[in-house]
Length: 174
Figure: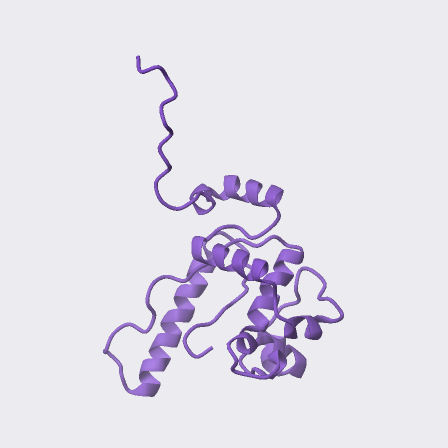
């Protein structure tokens, strides 16, 4: 994408995600400034990266589908597999980058993946994904989400935004 990117990462230990993202954004920023001769002119990234836990089932496939159809959704390519900066393009090319950087998915990729990626996702899928991105809320079924929220202390990510509504006093005034 011209102004952002998506990664589906599987950290092995606590803290790995933040360390990797720190290294990636620092290295990219340094190289970008060197290439554009703008060293010392300021930040390249605004704000911290966004992340959310994903259930290791069809929810992961929904996230991967969203990521791999990003160029198509943004009208930057007529077909998702033609977007050269996508993992889908690299996996189909079976190039050195794909072999070195892209891992096998922990769930089987459906046989008709290419057709599925090129079909629009439902509004409900996109809404649920964007909610997880914006709030950092776990993306999975309700039982899994409840367990992950408790385990990782993510209660704030699933609460409604804003102050709780005041409940009218139903007493007799005493």
